Length: 340
Image (cartoon, rainbow, N blue to C red; front, top):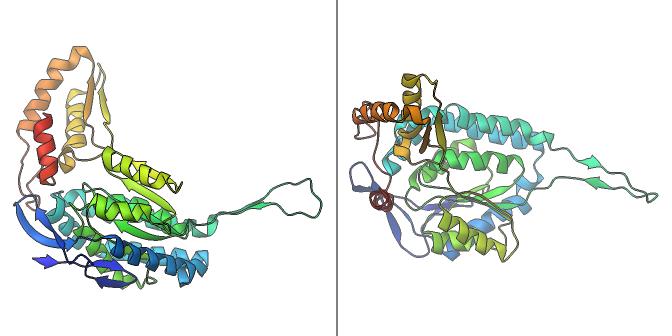
């Protein structure tokens, strides 16, 4: 079993609390790693490291083109280590490797390449004025330090969606993954040592929502918050941020409909429905968790779905023959069991 530290200022640190949180492999029900239970002191260390990187360090003064090259190095390292990162995330939350590793090698790292090319394309503009000898212009500036709070269902995927644009805009970040799935994010910081990043550019604190996430959102030097998670956590983050009138971007899940019309190809539609809900055991904001069917097709579609679903192979996500992995953690399992 591996015990992790949190990452701040380019170094690894034990939590000020002296306490760790067990990470359980959901497929086996066994504790396989421990992550720090960080408090406000740890948060302050991470935020100050990010602020130093932005205010006094190289990141805030770096030319946009060079910033783009740094982001490209991040993408290269993630691609190189995709299998390692995918396996760690599988052990941490039960997600099938085939739903992680290929994405890390394609559209997720493509996001970094795209935003790397955007770094030198944030253009300002001159605005007309009726006052002689006055220059009126608009320029885009980074927030400075951004807090990126991610969910347990797809820690790396959600993080990459936030991280690439935040870095392209010139921000330094403090990342707070869910206490239920923090290991893959910490492993990402480990592999990114190869990318030779400025110290303090990326920082990761782990812990519970109230004792870690709350102080992070409330820290006066955090100027912007991006949150992905459940409604209670999002509401709490918005309430804390509102006290300082700091902007919050939230993604709080979804119930995406899959629509089957009367003249649909039933076999094709059923396969689409299954592939839209079974990955990640349905634990995704983009899962097709509702099915809208023309009334003339209800019985037939239902029978076909039951037939296909009954033959799905449920098991260890590291077994290549597995089609559906476990529910990611015990709280999610209790919620699912009580909700159906």
